[in-house]
Image (cartoon, rainbow, N blue to C red; front, side, top):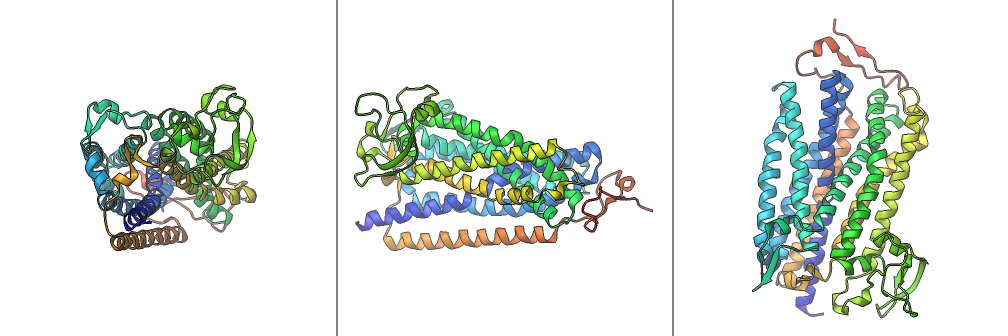
Length: 480
């Protein structure tokens, strides 16, 4: 391997590290912002202090995660210019505009309202504070759209002409609403809600399992589980829609995800078998072994019984993506999605049977443990989904138009190592700090004593801490 190839490899690994660590923060920001809005809206509608205490508690977790997302997001934009200079220059006419839209319509928009949301309690009216929280949630989703739009354009470039080393925009509508984003953005948005709901449910289950603030966190657990009964299977459906878009826009990537090497069997019939597990052979032109189910691949990708699905043999060897990472990462993601759906249905059944009430929720210890375990799984699903998406696009940085090797910056091996060590150190510090402060907030627990802002709180009083009576109903202390 030459120095140029080694430098390019290190730079690619470096960017993979940066994006892998950044991608875990925005989904929680997006989903938690929506949950905070819901909790605050319920507080205003019912004047039930439980919703206020939940909102203030999860707001602290939101702030920690938001700060980490901003820090790693800025780092990722730096990495574009440092590690992928030629690509950044070539794609600037599109990516520069899209990221500019994200800054104006999302990042600055969000920054303007997040101060009101965090520091405006008791200083602005309840209605205005709810409006600020709503705008934080909306801006977070807008930010996700523009970022996913930029990445989706790399997966299914449209509306551009690539000439003289630059992508020239010929149709802004087609470029922004490219085929991939119409399925990828809903997939990411629903994934954000699913992750945040499981995160909130896991934190709530942890407190309930420990017998602390049971009356408070029973509310957040029950509502999260009921929402997951809809969100978890919806995510599976949206993921299937994205798979069909990938089959049309990135067929080589789909073939790699399925370990599908041969379009037709030796007898000339369509190869419609789905590989449950497989491993490529030494030549890279087939599987050394595989466990297959006939016709399932065609059913999954074309919704027919025997329609051909293009295999890797339909593409030149130099245009084929790696197989092992997208193949197994995709299966891990899909398996997690199925498992989380089952856990959501389990919780829905318990709620239907009345077993998630304040008096009975502590009896479901195995379910509570399953929820706590499930709190980490959406992160793993997002990681493996992202690896599937990015590795299956190779060897292209812009699918079918610009190869990754042409987009990587030309730097010395020592420079590449310097940036790799620097970015790795920074991301690990942010990651460790994030989990330290999240754990600190959880250990400290919710504030049950501070006065409630706004008019009317003196009639309601404050919710008693019933840690000593975890099975009891909420007790409200009236002011004397």
